[in-house]
Image (cartoon, rainbow, N blue to C red; front, side, top):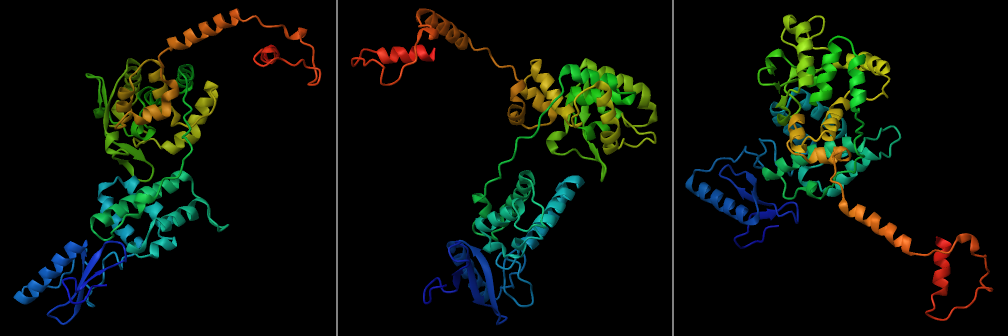
Length: 424
């Protein structure tokens, strides 16, 4: 609490130990007002400023800007009285215009289903610590209630990522003193399954496909485009003159055609001779039907889920290829490019990744490693050393008991020679 009789009268710390200082004073309206000042020095300066304004007659009730003023005619909006659930909903509303419709929908479903239904959502923002976050993670990952389904580590980490943004925003607006997410670690996730097709399998898949499917699968296998990006591709994004495919949009069943997954996903892809031939083949089928490279019968984008469930299994059966999900075509492009000497940085640019980290992390086993001359020299040294050692044949060694074993003089090496012969 404030210390009476000195310059800190009217200052108090809330919550205790959080280094968040507030001011309390009586305004000209005879009402008690409280405001957040930040650290102690900032709070002291704010209190002095308010006293000056009251004396000069320029004081106004300090509402808005996220500042707490405890006037009974206005709702309290500071971190002391704002719950995590309310602030998370406000954060989501502010973020929505900056997200694609699909990403915004995913965020909203995640927060509504797993955060707002938890008891932590009803807790005051300033009262939440890393222990509360740990309890949330435990309840989601290993729920004690039999009726509640556990979430995967990946799903829990998605929620933690959103919470990091929520608390960073609250910290930036000085609604909290300490960010509890700084002490929370991600759950360990299993490595994503990367099971790409080899070159022989890829060619058999294309041969087993029919009509437009051949061109579509050639694009997926030899450019690394996501299925939604390929189905949203328009002819004006295909530059045959310069050999460039411009990826600027994607399609999903819920929201139709829109922006790609991330800003980095908007990229230009180089056209190989195989891809150019596939697009030329498709141009004869669809260019006069509309803007889309792969239109449906009625000219709209092909329904991706329908292709996954009907067309794709049929093609794999005909090709006699072990079943894998359609997205493995993207992984297959990386594998084939690495096996034929492409640079990871070029592959990352083709995929729309901002760095090569993902390429090294997921596809290291298909990278060409430099041959080790040292290992060859080591093998030669092992063979040379073995040829020098005269080993006693194992058949000539008679089994002995410990009692019948002859005692060797110290340092004679008899026992060690016998053991070497036995090992060999």
